[in-house]
Length: 496
Image (cartoon, rainbow, N blue to C red; front, top):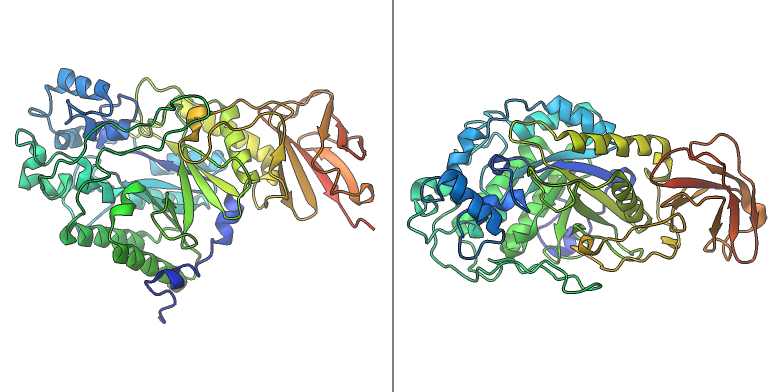
């Protein structure tokens, strides 16, 4: 084929966000791997990091649990979890059906986390889910099942972090043994700063940017980067994902490698005849070359660029399954999605399955409840665009950007978000507004003559309304058509 995208930023910035993502709005991904076996702590996917670091663990509970349960990393290394990660109840079709029922329009797994264990049928490492653990091509089975449900397929990749993730300098641990370098990464001895990440808000209104324990350490070797690139290309060429999601250590991948991967993926999309998209964090790719992702956070206001939140269905950012994690309410999930869409954003929701491959029952319940809401109100989400204003109401976000969920707020029936599709303006109340909805934002914009009708999705018949110089006033019905959020559809025609 003719090369369309060159590995330079000017060329890569010509790539546009696919229309399918602009219309889809909502996706689901899964953190599932050997770290799911221990199933404890604040962030389950970071168990392999913390189990080796008694002096500087980001989660001392995981460090202590590993010593108490397994005798410590001297006796039981992370590699020893792999035979216990059997996934005997994993059913890709069941997962895909559940994600479809939740209203997701794209879905997929973490292909490789920081731990170095590859979840696809790779020719580049012996440490993979086909030869060990579940002994299945997890990525491949999910690709077929998800596409079979009519959804787009995504893969999340974290494998750039593997360079810093394990303490190769600790001779008492298996992480220093060259025999296991395929899992733990090539041994190197630079310890670097190992203090815990500062993620807790100091006071209301202030959200700390995480300082990862290895962020200032040495740069990865050419050998490591070549393997990083080869694995990335293998996923692209083998599974043809519609979306590739990247975690934070992409910032330490040498610039040319980042450009080459983007050019390869974008050109392959052209060759396949389909639109593809990449997401990234912070400033790890050049603005305009891909879609920015905010971990556990969102923007306060409508943005000039599109973006995506990645958040987890649990309420502590555990990502993978942990036994004691509680779950976000369905209202919180609905409000997160609605708020994002009104501000030119999307939502990627994580689910953490158990080690045996089953998805926790509470998580399934939340997903089905979210899907029930979308089945009734999806007209105001899918295929919509933002309006002039994202919304109005008394409740304001306290934090902003990545990790602003630390300061999450609770919305009311007076908090309204707007979306638009064709001639319809949707006003979505993030709570039941009682007898009337009063919307100030529309008064300076809408003419009374252009409003054909006002209705409430899920309620039969039109509603009475009146437009004053200050606000649009809508009389609400007695019965609520659903829970969580309520969509008033303002159908419009020619003003004159």
